[in-house]
Length: 380
Image (spheres, helix red, strand yellow):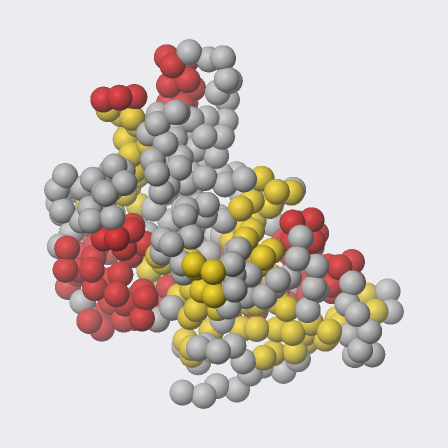
């Protein structure tokens, strides 16, 4: 299916004109009549180099006029290409312009089941899992009771081969599940999800996914290096309670956390239902590690307890497997270039990471949230 790209958008700040011209991305899809994702090439009409400050000013101008929000509501993800400064500082400048211009604030991360490095103000590394592993589709923190409204990505270094950024539209995934598995959709919508995670203790990190409950973005923000184990655990409990009352300690000082969340929500602007959860991503990771059957322990020694319905009843494996397949089928693998900025509506777009075996790949991430109730994701 072909789709007509939108008209170019223009900004002028302090006499500097910047054009945002739509371009077709290889493999782009059409979701509810709109191209997905949308790519915008930024340039100055006079052909001169677009500086970081000029690009940031133009992006802030669009955000202050409500254009950025309208684009994200319509297209879900927008790839901005043209400010050729692939640095963490440049990303911080650009993403602050985009989100401060919208009146949003940085998201306060908690419960991270992964590892991230801080590179600049509100700029973190994306997944630090080994490069040969797939990271499958998930809306950021969607299996948690707290999550950001937006997550943005920046290409610092592009892999020579592989390492694409797959994006999938959560409204399209909802549509496909409704078409193929209506009984499953009805059941998961009615019952909701119990999303479990097992966090290892400090000093006992796993091979592939290196994280513990004591990490500063997990439950360890108040933990000090010289705290004894009992003190560390007590401090972690305070943070875990911010997410859920359902957590307990296991043998070996492991922390198991269960969060009860809906599987389907409604987008605040479009009103459309979206598949907002991490079922596909979690199942795919467990599948790769050979951990989709009891005792749900992978070849790397990590525990991968499966999601269940909130009442504790199991979700049929065939439904999890087909959901994972569908999320891969509809994903658009975007080959980003150094300096590319991907603005993503976390409510209606999931993301992942393709493996790479040649060259270095560094993708940076920044998460933001709205405190305006009318812009929060709604119950279905």
